[in-house]
Image (cartoon, rainbow, N blue to C red; front, side, top):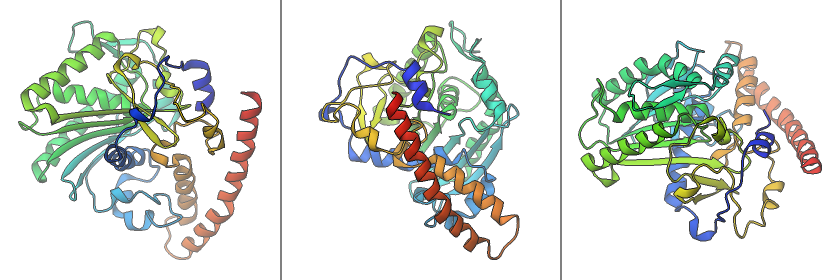
Length: 361
């Protein structure tokens, strides 16, 4: 999908210009880069159990998860397949940080894409005029019981110092729906004082203004009860990623994050709360868009958060699955040869697409 075109058609520029004074700290960038690895791998075409069992292999140079080193040492608590549109999710434990991580997949099949198009509003059980995207709600309901059960198991079986909820694209929207359930009165009561972190990337809007306001009230209440630093919220939008502009604001949908982050040229910027619905920003010192034009992102920034290439990851997974064929043996040599041959072809194709993009935009 050409997310650049979606951005051109649907996204609007904020009148507020960002500058070097808005750059997020290196610590935040590093932390989100690590958590983003969990968000991105929820899209994996490999069975989740296979992925975690073979991290040492998959993270080698030229393999699908090259550069995904934050996953190493993690323990899979539960792999989940949703009852609606086969949505994937998993819960894993990071012993090195004592984090329990819930990761929800973005759109990865036609059934999920069809649910994405169900932009009518569904009344949320919490009431107060709160409504959510119908398709998102149906998919969330299809994973909610198993996700809650997996969180309970993870908290019981491991020494957890922080609960993290993360997702990319659709997974980001559903991460908010899960976080609302975790903060609102429910059957699952989080341990008193447990820090909660929400890290989402390229999330579409998923509820109305009342739902957005409720989210902010729940966050304030959690911080009042557990401490100011008990809940950290990071919602990242990227330059030329059209997904955060969907569904349109004119349809009555709103973003929940009061002050999202903006990614451009590999740098994260803090944005003011007044601009939370905008998806594009001009940045002083970046010569507007000129520097972005030399980056090989002809289809926009949606699959390139944290300076990683999710399209490349998906291609490598497909090649590896085709060559493995369930057999051990020389498939690895064949796989590496295919990567060397085919990825140069992908680079050439990207360069041609980029040239056409620049010609007509």
